[in-house]
Amino acid sequence: MKKAMVGAVLAVLSLSLPAFANTTNKFQIKGQTADAYFYQSDECNYTSVGIFASDNVSKSSSGIPTSQKGAYVHYSNYNFCTGQGSYGDGFAPDVTFTSDNSLRSATLNGTVTLNDYSSGSTKTVNVALTWTGTGDTFRGNSHSHQQGPRFTSNYRYVGAYRQAQVSGNVTLDGKNLISGLSSYASLNSTNSGSVEIVRK
View 1 (cartoon, one colour):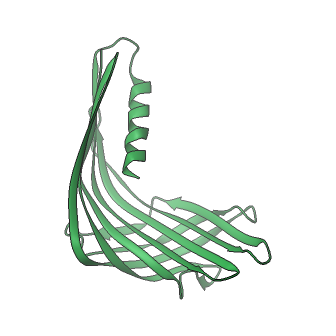
View 2 (view 1 turned 90 degrees about the horizontal axis):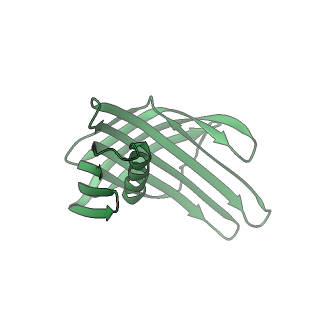
């Protein structure tokens, strides 16, 4: 996930630079995220539901800090015995998501409109989840450097991660999609991240 984000940022910044200008661009991001994955399988069925929530502040060298909050939801169900299934996903920027810096807990409440690809329709899912941190908190950092004929880029990530227990409801068509499912969840904190590109 972090590598994908960095790659996307690098691509956007490199395309936006003038052809021969000496330019330095910086991108910084700081904030909290929580994710949860619910799943169940038997000899015929496989069901999964994924939730990702974030509350970040990003800033480029030429702009003011921008708050970005939202939740992404995806679900799928497939019956191997009958060959039938359903799947869909969606994102909502106007949810209520809170998470503390010490990774002790987080809550997510909101409504997400999903594209149901199996039926070609849109559906509404109501999400009400609580994360409670468990076990140790792991901290780490990484740094990368790239250099080419006309650019130099640097990236640094500093963050923390903690496993969590998650409880609550993800309700679609009057049914709690996560009832009885196994789960895996985590709380994450990105203390700082930046990308710098110098075009020569």
